[in-house]
Length: 146
Image 1 (cartoon, rainbow, N blue to C red):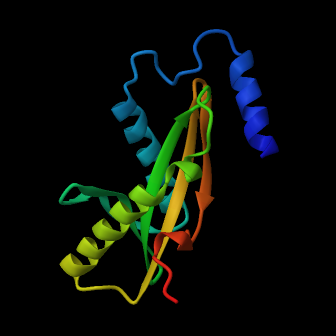
Image 2: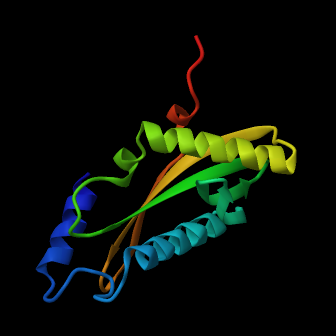
């Protein structure tokens, strides 16, 4: 948490806007965050199989093959001045949408032996490389069975 506070403070000390680009729309910001997340996975030796894959109204930001594990990735991109962590933005409604989309992907490709959900937070600040926080194995996305 300290690193986030230090990064926010360094961004706020800079003169001018802390947005990545004053003309940058939310869609463009999201695309930049997904690009950074895809580079992050490629740097780990993973293969990106799909980006912005849609199943009905639901969407998977990234589908990645990491070894023998199929990873469904939700990317949350934030500007430095925005409060809140991307992890907390994945609420119950979004979890249901991710499960539906993941089931659609698995039906389309015939299943996978090992599946995992990850959440990747990308913090973009002008003049600073994107900061990535990777939450591996967000198990809370599958419904619990008792």
